Length: 327
Picture (tube, rainbow, N blue to C red):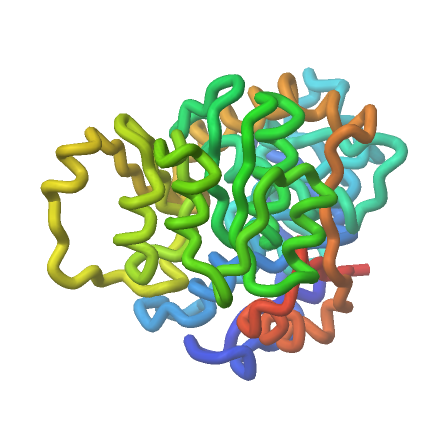
């Protein structure tokens, strides 16, 4: 089968398509014929990871496709021919992949494979950070940075449809902010032109927000502190703005009694991902089936253009998900 790995850790030019052996499935796995995968920042981090040793992994942590084989004969829900999407432990940029059956999400009949591939990583991350870690409650206010990103567009929809929260977003262009508005965001901030912390305080009558989903990290440290209310929660998902904060004043964290949590979904245990997926299926998938929430696809690249797709994400051009069409 064709699959995408790397020649060596480095930039997008190190990506290559080559022939790989078919994945072997163990008890509890599905063999899935992949129709679409998606680009995630964790794929770029893996590609650049100089600690990797050969043989280098097949990239990709989420797929949509068709079940070819189910090693658990007792689960008729996932018979061969069933359309599924879900998280995988690498291997998503390939024609076939092994997927734990307890992470399989049934694709609604009205949804394409490309749209379905835009769900697992970003919507599960958004659900995890808003509810499991962020404990977002009805009518609270959440500040979502990188609002037009994959996780951002997912988080806006979940916060509005499931919690009726007030949603403030930051993004770097009017085009991206308009997408956020269309998805339900209440307050739009162009971080390139405006000081978001002051706008947040003005919008919240100087109280601040209950929750921040932060993809940026170091460069937003002070402004995030200013933007949070007393007893606010701050979930760090990414570090696009750097990892080192100089001269931290921990007194501000203490004074506001702020809870700061860092998280990455990909390194989580198989059991954690299964529990998260199954709660997501129960509580969120009905919204997709009724088309009240939708995956946001920015663009679709063929597998042979995977390097272009990586560069497109690195250039921060996308509004929503970047999809790889595998077939």
